[in-house]
Length: 333
Image (cartoon, rainbow, N blue to C red; front, side, top):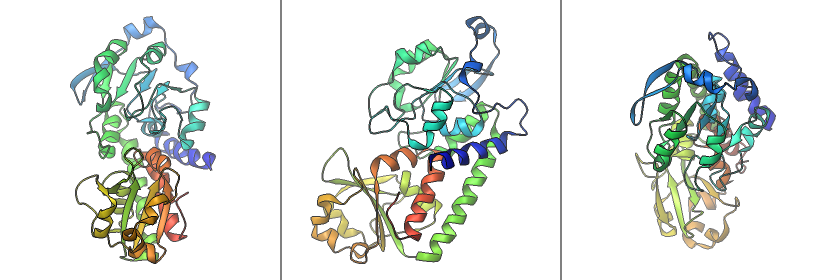
């Protein structure tokens, strides 16, 4: 499965970069990208616009350390990187399954987690990698000045909820002169979403959906998703109909079990740490939900959806997992 997933991402990247002058093979060994300090000092720079304003970065960076969570985007664009913070939002060290092979084959070093929720970045390790460019996000704003002392640092545009993934991807495409590659990737993504939507709607029609998560941090509370992560995939990509009780125009809401009485969904995706219902199943309100009584609840694990539902390559794969769960009336793999 991992090899098929990695092949999907890398083959797509290769197809779209084949005609780009000067494009790099995303599987180039990092040893071949090393440059001396003297070369760094003499290389050309370009001015870009990031979340902080105007910043000078190398025109052809060879030792990128990405702590913004943009491994998927860099792989798709064929831009090698030597360090990454694309690790599990649950432990900050584990590389998601669909990225492990790429990281191993390209000697990518782990330097923390891009979410800022599971520990600090390893600034010492970042410095040891001798980057010529660091890419970061607003969640690590507190160490922005420290990162700038290590290497030129660019902050991708976004808020803390990671709903602007398309905008981030397009911004990176502009920085690396890969705008055509990004646009082609997004076109492929949208075509895949449309294809999956048609298959799913052939099964469920206009029946309604809710996407719920048992909160890993605050026991007894839940997330009801809308534009964030799995919510975006269900409603905006697969084009499924939100039920009553699903919030509008926000990533989601934090609720308690009593809130379930407002949800009248025909189908429910329910995520938890172990992929099971647990004590939530003891709630009479839960037991009376239409989706529950009709056996239309699809269970999934929190760590998997967090590690895949917020970045482009992960979204592409996870969207298919969600569609398969509905079509096959099964849990999310």
